[in-house]
Image (cartoon, rainbow over all chains, first blue to last red; front, side, top):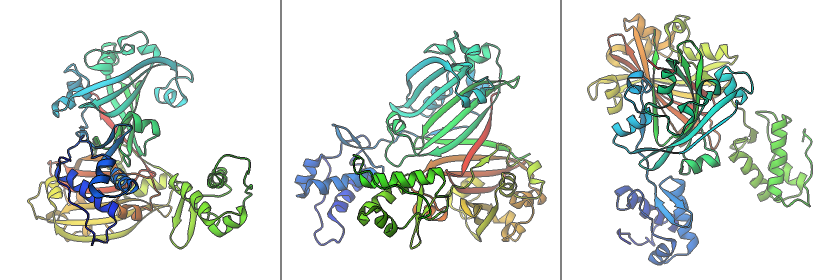
Length: 260
Length: 260
């Protein structure tokens, strides 16, 4: 092992598995086990401490429940890397940002010194669900263009998003292609004459579903923000609904409320 | 027992504790066990099913981990009552609401048909923490008036809030008394000449601390919103910081973002 680890204290009334967890936790906190580093294997820890596998497993389980480590199937246990927190500003969708020719996610992540990427882009057309139809002011079963994708910072997934746009607006346009071009969906909508007026955002917090844990590589005990944004054009028409799930580890949301 | 409960299915390959949990879950879902109702005791369930205490405990544990029941120490297990969800509108602190002479929480809860109450009101004066001083633009160790309280809907706690105001503004005023009077803190500030301009809100989601679980009577697996709001007067001065912890069960937050 490349970090110093004390032996057990036989006089302590602290259970052995907790002592082992304490040692590993201290190594993580002091940085001798860095984010992303592999935690010594069960076999290594058993040999080092002279304890049974169950004891080592209890120690590792404890660290995982504290959100300090992540087990990767077949690869071992790793110190959890937390992505840099993305602070979402209350003017994040203002036109002056859109006009810079990049999507908000790309601009903000780069400004914060992170490396943004987007993957798992999937595009389809389908009947609107009752909820989406209601939010977009469509009739039940009107067609919508559906764009889903995943956002990553420094290779770590932080958010999944699914946009729904009326097919009557977005069908056959660049919005229905994998690369929506400079400025993204909102820039394309404005070019098509749908000048944007405002966005409504609705936020819930909850524990993630199993597939969300997987898509966002969430550590145990990490809730998600479930945020649904509706974009309104200047004529009052809803032109997009974006349904997002964000790791609560990776985001601080900020908003400004009027007092007048 | 005052609800019909089937016996076990000996031919099923579903473990016995899951079968018992299934029966109780169905009774909860169909409403024969209503929110707030006491779940049959361990002894009753043991006798009804002819199983060991551990089996009954596993079944009850499963329901609790699903957020369907709550164990109250020494009193038994109860079907969890979920408070009505409070939807926070993006204009919730607009002056037209404040002018109605009640605090936003009271007005909104009554409009939604709920019974609002506030308890655990505590008022003190102390040195500002580094974070509060920064948000209020104070020097380190400037004094602040601290008002903490808990908000309840239909007797169920939904939010704790701690407001910090510069003692130079709020000290010795009605803001430092248990009853702040009609319209609450914000109405008093405006009467004192601090016309409010806007509020900044910053939102995180996380699992609750142990004392938050207690104060908000949170069921297992319920994250909280941690929301910090800063109130700004028209001259740009920050006049209040309100640090709140809200049950994610009880709130949907909504905001409007500009597109221009």
